[in-house]
Image 1: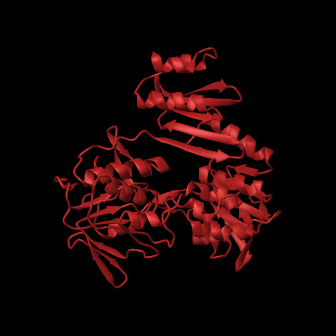
Image 2: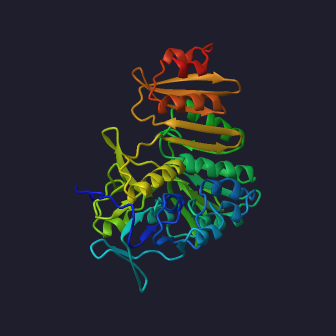
Image 3: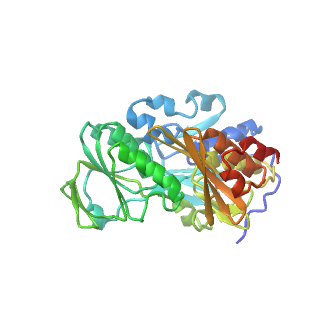
Length: 413
């Protein structure tokens, strides 16, 4: 694999195009201006809205507690003020990395350097399951939520497919709106890929206390209905009546444009430590990328990674040559539970739990090495764990288990 050599380029003679007007694309554009880039800068988005936050979509916005304008990352006028051209509602058709052009319909835009911040695509149900019926929704875009909101009437019956964070957050909001919610997870338990059973147990219990019918080890066999979905048959043979379906079975990196342009991809757009792709003068940031991390490769789906990587790539596009080193952290709000996660728990062989006031935390270890922490209504535990990871400082399982141990002392050891 070959990556662009990243020659010094602090002053540009031409323009920069950014494809993708989400969190990563907007952050990249803002950082380029903040770093002093004064050339032409265009941010291209396939949605008609200016860049907006996605996390509140399935929470405050779906609940009706947040107006659309409050979702916007910046007031639309700021893009004019900073000389950032917005080209919205215009999907890019193709990229010519040799001719250094981007095709949008009949238009062709040239670039000196290009950044791909195209994000990810929600997984959908196979046609054999969905049967092309109406009333099946994903939870990714503003338009998705605008289609779901009118269906969320008191007493409506909804099936949520998928027991990861996307599905669980959607189920929590639906339950709060007074819907009758059934959630199915094909794996043996919810959050099986991303969290310990100790964390899953707390979240499951909270959902059940709010009336959500969680069925684990059960999948969706097929949907029923005449044009619009009206029921479902599950893999255990049971059937349920439905008004609509929410599909929360995860997302995948959007590599379609990159692959068609001949850019190397494998579980995302492959980039080096500076964010450069295999194509000259083409960079990438955010959910769509797969980047070097601790001797392997990693793809992160989080707001913070989108911001941090985009800002690092912006600086590197202007010649900084500074490797991107992430400090992963995530969060999920469900009912009155605030789950905060620091680090990556993959590969752990031990989980140690700690009570913290009315909350609790679960600490992941591989041998004696601290990997990550899940903190549920335990903000101090989260902050200490996150800081330990950022400082590359270890903590012993016995220390975490000791109820009398002062958490802050872990940082001073």
